[in-house]
View 1 (cartoon, rainbow, N blue to C red):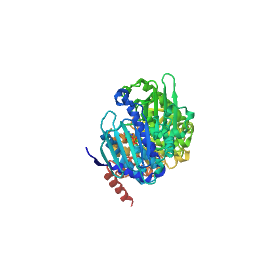
View 2 (cartoon, rainbow, N blue to C red; view 1 turned 45 degrees about the horizontal axis):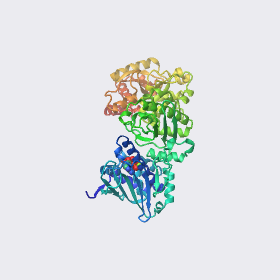
View 3 (cartoon, rainbow, N blue to C red; view 1 turned 90 degrees about the horizontal axis):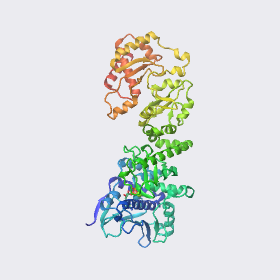
View 4 (cartoon, rainbow, N blue to C red; view 1 turned 90 degrees about the vertical axis):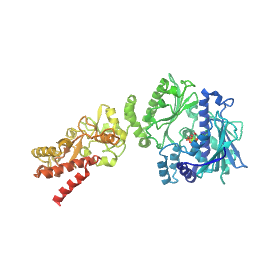
Length: 614
Ligand code: ADP
Ligand code: MG
C-alpha cells in the first residue's frame, strides 16, 4: 500500500491552530506529553501481557528513549509499549474522540491566547499535538504489539496528514520531531536532561537520554515514595500525566491504607472544571493499579460517581494481578477500597472547607456533583451535608448548614429553601417576600440536582428541609411582623371571604384552593404547593424531560394588604373580577418561571382591563 493523504477532522485543525499560535508560554511541555504517552503505552502493554505473554516476548523490560540528532535537527521519543495499528494511528492522531468538542473550541478561540486556555485544551487529549509547537513536521512510526506490520504517520500540522507502510522495525512507537528554526535548545543534552527531570521524574518507566547508561528519571512509582521526599512540583507533574491535565491540582491527597485492605492512593482535585463533568455517563477518572501494574481506568466500582472530579491512582495490594476487567464488577475488595477512599476524601474535604476562599472556589466547580452523593450514598450523607454551601437571602457569602442553623430564629423549626432557574428569578420570587420581611433566612437553590437532594436528605440535625412554596407556613409564629404593619390597610375579613368565593368560582378547576397568606408583602398573589404535591420547580423539570404530562393544580394565595386585592374585594362587576382573577393566576405562574398555557387569552384579557382604565 502506498502513501495515503487524509485531512484532519475539523476540530483537530482548529485545535492545532490554537496550540501552535496561542500557547507559546511553555513550549518545553511537548516532551512531557510525548513521554507521558509513551509511559501510558507501556502500561497498556504490560497489562495485556499478563494474560498474553507472547505480546512482549523476550522484550519485556519497558523503557522510553529520548534521542536528539543535531545534524538532522530532530528529536525522537521511542517506547516499546503497545504501539498503534494503521486504524489507531488515524483514529488517535487524526480525530478528537470526545463529543461536544466543537462548541468548546469556539469558546477557546474567543479567549485567544489566554493562559487558562491551555488548562482547558488539555482536557481534549491534545497532548500529542503540542509537538507542533516546536516541530515543523512530526513523524510517528508504530508497530502494534503482536503484529508484523508497521506504519508511518506524518504531518506538518497544517490540516492534513499522510499514512503509509513502514519497514517493520521494533514493537512500539517512535515519534520524531523535525524541529522548527530557532528550537535548537532541544538538541543538546543538558537542557533535555533538565526538562525530563523536571517534568517526567515521576514516570515509573525508565527514561534514557541519548543511550546513556542510567535513566534520567527516578523511574519508580511516585505514589510509593514517602510523602516527605516528594515536592509539590513533582506531585503537580504527576497530576498532569495521570489526569491528562494542564491545570494545577487544588488539593493533593496521598495516603496509604493498611490493615485488612491495603492500598496506596494518590488523588488530586483539579483547580478547573472538566468540560465533561456533567456527561450522563458520570464516569470517574481514577486509575486502578495492582501491585504497580496498571490495570484499567474504567473500574467503575473504584470511586463513586459523585467524586468523579478526582484524578489519580489507587494501587491495590490485595487484588490478584491477573484480575480481568470483568472480574472487577461487583468485586468485594474493590467495594472496600471505594468505601475507604470515599471516607478519606470526604474527611479531607471537610478539613479543606476551613480554608474558606479556596473551598468556595472548589464548591463553585464541583458542588453540584458532590450533592448527587446525598441521594446516592446514605452512608456518607451526614458528612456530605456538612460540605454543602449555599447562597441565601440573608448573606452575601456562601453559607454552610451549620451557619444557617446558628442564624435560625428561636421558634423556627425548618430549614427553608427555594428552587429556581437562576439567582435572578429567585431574587424576584414573591415566595420570599414574607421571609425577607421577617429576616428568616432562605437557601437559594439553582442547580438541577437541587430538585432532588432535599427530599432525600430529609433533615439536617433534626431540622427538616422545607421548600417555601409549600402551603401552610405560619410565619407569624416564628417572627410576627409589627402589629401596625399587619393590620395596616387590610381588607376586612368578610370582604376577603366574599372575594375568595368569587375567585374560586371564576378560576374553577384551575386552582386547588384560594386563600389568604402572610407570606406576601409586595405582590398581590403567588402559587403554593399543597402537602403531597410535587414542588413547582421539580414538576417543571420533569415536564421538560417528558417524565410527566400534566402539571398539578396549585393553591392560589392572595395578599389582603395589596391595593389590588383590596379594590377587588369591593368590586361589583363580576365579569371584570373574573378577568382579573385569571390574569393574576397567569401572573403568578410567570413569576414562578412557568409559561402560559394560553398567551393569547392572557393578553386579550389584559387589554380589555387596560381599556377600561385608560
Ligand atoms: P491523551 O494522552 O490525553 O489520550 P494525546 O493527544 O496525548 O491524548 O494522545 C492521543 C492518543 O494517541 C492516546 O490516547 C493514545 O491512544 C495514542 N498515542 C499517543 N502516543 C502513543 C504512543 N507512544 N503509543 C501508543 N499510543 C499512543
Ligand atoms: Mg497524552
